[in-house]
Amino acid sequence: MLISAKEMLNKAVEGQYSVGQFNINNLEWTKAILLTAQENNSPVILGVSEGAGKYMGGFKTIVGMVKGMIEELNITVPVALHLDHGSYEGALKAIEAGFSSIMFDGSHYSIEENIAKTKEIIKICEEKGISVEAEVGSIGGEEDGVVGSGEIADPNECKAISELGITMLAAGIGNIHGKYPENWAGLNFEALAAIKDATGNMPLVLHGGTGIPEDMIKRAISLGVAKINVNTECQLAFAKATREYIEAGKDLEGKGFDPRKILGPGFEAIKATVKEKMELFGSINKA
Image 1 (tube, rainbow, N blue to C red):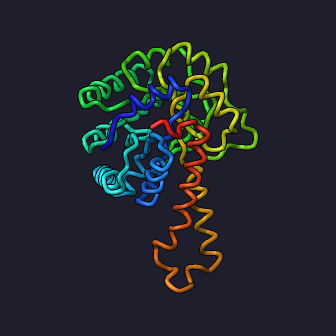
Image 2: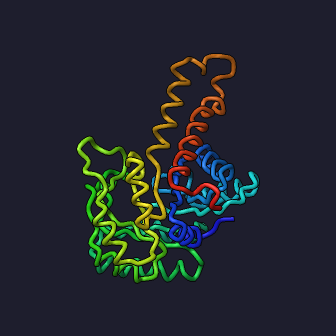
Image 3: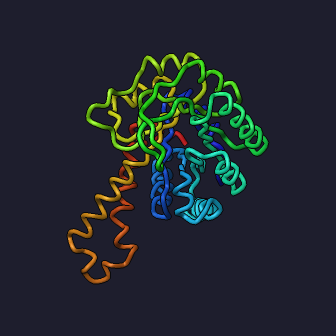
């Protein structure tokens, strides 16, 4: 059963840990993340970008796959299925398809229009018991073709958006999507503290969790970050394991060309990466 992210994130704020959002790209990804969450008794959020949604055959296909897997793999830990960086139209489609959590990314609109559209999404989601994430100040780097440069969100804007009835808030604190450049300045903890003061107990979301040093992650969690998004790191681990399998010529041995065999090492690499993150975020045994 899919649930909203509200309860798991409120518990995370109280317990000073963070729940990982791991983006899914296909069946292997989904299965690896769900099994790792179950094995480590951790709540988990499956993130789906609109691009990944199209790739997997549409939002209804994804809902069917995830619900079927939860049932047949006997997954009992809390699972939320979350639209990542949704457009207004995308958010409506994901709600209709049965997603249990929605991020409406109105960060490219004016603050007035962002607030108006966010309010509409919140109203629909409240009626259906779906959690809502909003974003203030664009997150740097590249996310499905959307490029930003690691802005610092304005605490007053954060306060205004947090009071609309959202469940969680993504606020830019110098974090970026994808790989971090050599000259990255690091997270801005003064900004994070100011945002925390402005928004109270609102669970905060850290996008671009790949490549942020462990001590920074732990400090961010202590300052109210209750959800951390991981995507690139799983992709890199999957690609590395797949390349090693092919370079070793294993696809040429016996039935090594079977896609289940080719994708096996990548599947295990995702599991190992997700477990490592769950340990770092402190979500193990918090289901």
